[in-house]
Image (cartoon, rainbow, N blue to C red; front, side, top):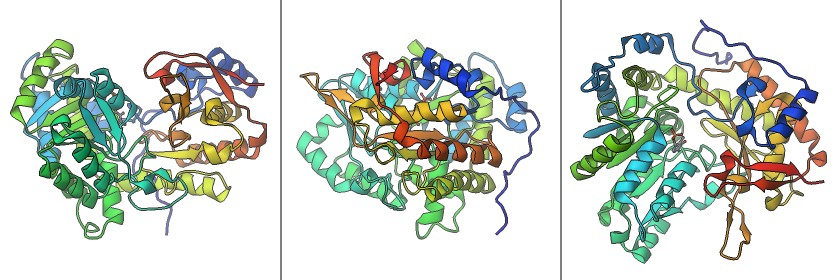
Length: 457
Ligand SMILES: *Cc1c(COP(=O)(O)O)cnc(C)c1O
């Protein structure tokens, strides 16, 4: 087997500014030990997110020049609409400035007090948008998806039996829609099988509940289905994607992931009444229905990105490069979610730092260490992001304490990834010196973006 190379050449480069460990110590302290508050210029390798960080292709940049900036009925909208429809088959396609804008509109229409929205795992903005309307966001992930060290093909699957008992318990009339996130970002970027999507749809249909797909990483999910699910090994990615969406009644998507662009998203559905209500809200908050908070050029770039993402050499390189990082870490004994997901490696902070309890944020401690050791920016997905307090103010940690190393699309080369593995392994070797953190400031919602910490002595 020869090395799987990046299926692109580099035409335009962005310099990386190097810092010393001493400098990074000060940078980190000034940022309240929160990587979201560090200046990008102070970061050597930025693995904070794969969202909106993709390198666009020469073709997409050319598309930017072709963007039609007409207020209404722009050519670029029709290209965008055709690209989304080709993949999802949805009747009504509504552009939004990003994924959470689609969520905000969808749940303003469908949510509300007394309602429940089940999912395999809701992403943080999805959960926040549901809860903001007074509805309850419920995660019904398959048991195996909650065990980081167990290898399985489709750890993003929803628990279908639990879904059915949940519907019976709460009443179908209180469940305006069911969601499934592909791949399951918050649960480790793990894929969902076609079989599971089909079964979830069957349960939803039985109770006349629409199924919405959170499609941020649909192409990565489709590629995993091709690799791992019998019967799909010879199918083109487009066909697999089309089958996935054939079971859905609606879609939300952040184009900042698998549409290979820096901004954008959409909401799509087959139900006309929901579409009408959504478009009315769109006009108030985002813009006219043929641009929805985006420039014509953005719509053009999304349309092209949605074609490029389905190319198999790209997906092969993409999934393999994440797996390559995973293999290096595992070989050195670093505990990660297995098998590696599509867009990121998730370090299991509970096993990495067993002596730091959840209320001292073991994930945050690793995040700080990776920045100090090598200028790598990562993000905690654990008690900082999803920890809650009960009525008595008692801290309730989530199931998992993770650190995500998200890999931007088409941005870093193999030597960058080698460097990342060296820094993580170095931190792992020094793990006994890592301390817990305490929160000194937090916002009432989505606190991880602005929270500030201090190290515990
Ligand atoms: C990124 C993401 C969102 C939200 O999209 P934004 O464009 O960041 O608003 C929703 N769901 C999932 C699974 C995501 O990864």
